[in-house]
Image (cartoon, rainbow, N blue to C red):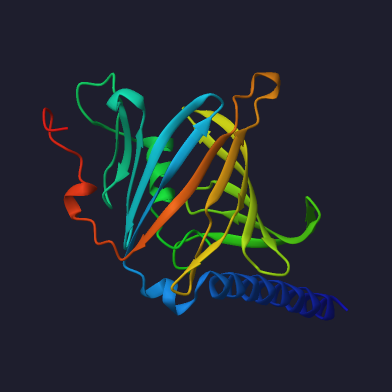
Length: 241
């Protein structure tokens, strides 16, 4: 009986792993499959809003893990956040020079730099995924995947049960030693040359009555294989911002 129980346990575990891998593959196919994997770089332009605050948005990503996001406010004020494959850095208008980030903040910007996202090739990246059942997301049936990154960050990813695209995320992340919880709604998917991109992302921090206004990113233009130069991602020397 004990041997039978072990066999049944292993069989159930294998079935669960197969289901997870099947969902991950369907998600990749829904986003573009081989066409997504062949994409070398992308530039997204649009806007960001947080309550009354508005800014223009530009995001550049290049394989394997280069990332840069610029927020351009009225008056020419620019906030930059970037990762060059090794170094993460930020430039704020009140800083005389760009500053390297480390610890939890470096982990966060490194995750943003993942070109395909944490689900694709998750095992090679050291991530773990568990199937956590199904859920209703504002009337849409969805699969729940519990994603734990190599660095230990946890995210519940909700995949639309019909399209297999991400529609919601619930995340726990540490920043400066404190645990932050957030909820992100993902939608407005647009297909460009066989690859699907989300064009509206709304994220809110869960901080009780003191929670800030949601941050909404809206993408208006998608340039595939835009080929940004390596200099775009490198931290600028002091005085050359």
